[in-house]
Length: 448
Image (cartoon, rainbow, N blue to C red; front, side, top):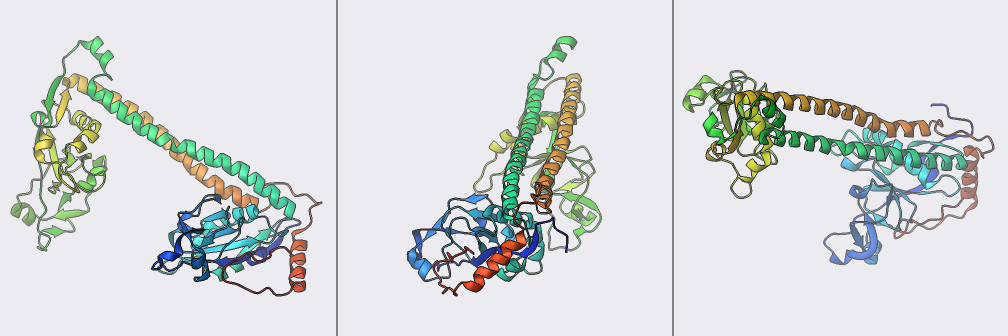
């Protein structure tokens, strides 16, 4: 067991709080819901202080189920599933479901803020402890037996106050960093819009002679085709090797260099599949979510399915990179062209007719150079952003670990040792008469 600072002592969570859990009233009884008692589910845990709930239950629900009313200042901990380890201070009297462990801090032994921060420091450990079953979970017994370093009461307040201050700054830093990624996305879109409207190279045209741009469409500068899906029921059509077969899902990649599936020569012959060369642009004509309208480029010869449009650019009329930039710049406009019901689709005709503003080859070359330069700058910023976000994400667990090693704030030799607090609690328990337990409330006396 790790050594603790002078004045601290080793304890268990069961020594620091009165622990209980709640319950879920029967959903089949409408009289149990819609009352005035806040009812917390584990999915709502996470905010430092929880002041409102999505649902409320009635007095009848409290009386006729295992739900209990916990006092404000109690600490709720998620024990089950994806939310395991999430923690909040309950800021209002409230009931909880059975997936919450709720601790009512023993007064004079531990402060609610200290307990809240310590539970937060243990989140990853709780998740690890809950592994092994179909659904991760920890039990009340695990929670009560969980080791907890206990600082002197006055130092607990100093630790919690310091953590509140520094973690607020960390959260503000993370929030500011999170706002950078959307700015970079908008920057790239602005660059593409300027590139394909002529604004990006206006000075270049002044220096090199103005050449009018031509309003045209995709079909006028390229050949547009598609593919199909060989019969899945024929085992001779797909193999572990062969010709790559690309679907619209792959268009999220900037450059497609590998395939999840391969087709045989038999499939190519039977379904008249065309093998498109490297450098072919792929436009997703339909697919779930944001797939539709995405533009990618084949980095290898491959066949495609019917959800993709293949755009083979004529090098005498346009540069592949420029057409790719133009299509990417108009991603949203392309999605608007889609037709249909629940899953709107593009079709080959709409892809062929999609409008393009075409400068001369020399200006296309300059546009590509400038866009690549600006995008490289954005990429460097994005890499720095990810490094900063990783560092910021590590700060919270590092600060919490430091706090509960006794290294965040100085110790004061005048503080009453934590061991004396536990002795006093034990003495008060021995002297106190046994309280009767009820089901409706967990507001037992926690004053030693």
